[in-house]
Image 1 (tube, rainbow, N blue to C red):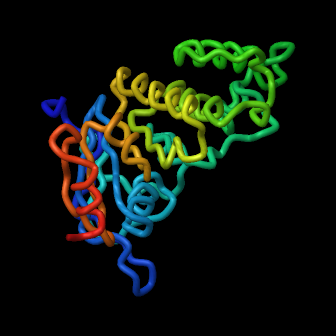
Image 2: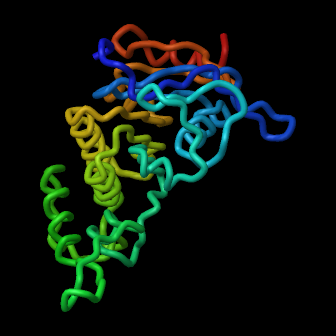
Length: 248
């Protein structure tokens, strides 16, 4: 895995908010088909670094490289256009729209009516929804139902399906299992394995160490805005990760 060039490299990245240093020379990388978990207490810098990667805000020092080229996206849409999809805990799905409409949100396919009148191609959206959900081995009765009708795990599948359809290279998942029951958590873990099998790079943030140990290839620990170390799950324990998070 590590022989391949990284999809993403974060190198000595720092970020201040006023007098508060949120990130201090943070470095890590993500390879194709690799899940890297970011572990750390609240305020440790995990959310700050993913927001710097995904164009929510800028960073002052250091470099973030996508396929070896430095990036500093001005907006999340610019990050998405360059193959970085972020799936937040609150999901950013439009509750009143169907699966297809959510997959295409802001990027709707058009067709010409009577050869000249541009209209949204709803059939294409429905076909893509069906094919994308099939790839995820995900079955719902009505693909045209609004997203509000689906459970938390199903909504996660729609968000992951969107990332797959738009062929994201890097998928950032921020607390994807936090609000879910155990069966739905299992489903999300298997969806992450699907993304991994497709060669995506995945950044996984969770407070659930069980999930981290199950899905991660590497764990990067944050403490007070800095790298506190990096471990492979099979070479460490939950106790050690917690000690790194809080400082010995």
